[in-house]
Length: 252
Image 1 (spheres, rainbow, N blue to C red):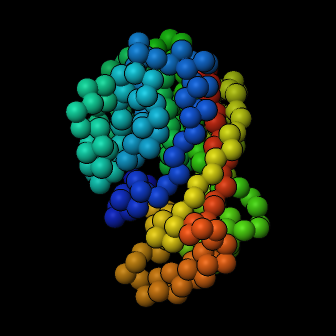
Image 2: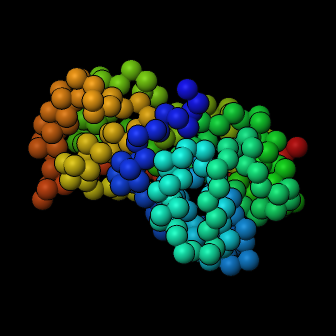
């Protein structure tokens, strides 16, 4: 199974129930990269367009590159009529974009699925001379308390392929090698509030989640419901994230 095929049948839950990216991220990019109406951006591994929703607000020309057909379909519906956004099938290792054409490459919640060496070659090919790369993840906080702690315990118990959350699924050495050692990183607090349907949908959006037609899912749903009832306030639970940001140029 290719990495992008892991999200077959998960695209709707992904679009509905994954956390969005905070507005502070767009402010940062506009200040630090000059992102704006004259920019050409490639959002690689763009999924259903969650990061693209934020980036397109800058007025840039945006290419969304996504190999998963189901996710592309949702993005196409989302951005229908937006002349600034083009949705393309492709991978990080083979984007199909022109050489020396891109000012900024953005990667939301996807870098850990790429083959780093081939991606590095491809990104260097399509970037303009002073182009930059943004890697960003919404990573659940490590708190053992509240809904965060309960969520972590449940996915560890039931999901054999669980690979940790967000940036923690990535080997730090791979980021250093990818950029050549020159990049900046920081994090932004991010909070997601979910009702019970959203909480279960959030779990089902993950590549490691047990599918709804699996007999085990009945017990998983009950345990998530119990956790929701324990921690809900006014019909919603809160999941805390760190939006982890890495920005840099690919050095030789």
